[in-house]
Length: 182
Image (cartoon, rainbow, N blue to C red):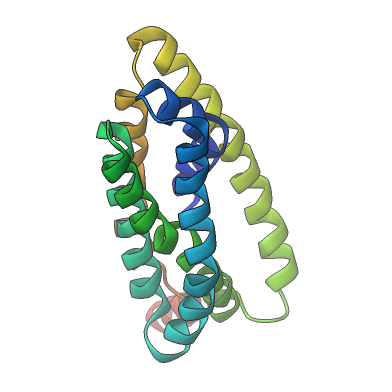
């Protein structure tokens, strides 16, 4: 899920300019941001509730699929309706995975190592968050379009949606390895 943060940080820096270049006014671009920010409150709450009921890996993967779809629409968007669709898809993608990801981290590593694992993951996440906007800006300079970088970021979000499904509890895996070696 680390690679998915590149799309989030790229949006944070480039989304308004992208929408304005597509012909939206600053006010309409702001409305799109307000749509996914407002709906995001609901999806943060929903994510925690759903993650308590179902396998957190699948919950996170589904929200990452929303993010991938949103970034794909954003890459191709040219009209207000497409950007509103982006906002509607991005709200669960952006907001939904947070609570489930935090809960999964606790489930996989336990309370004793939770803070250390969280700190380490934030270093990785923040490093990739720096890469997203720079990558997007360089790709825009090369292609004169925001389509290619956001398409790549959509693909990375899709890859993250698949990778998270393979997350396993390292304590269980270590126990299995010890049993198999004896």
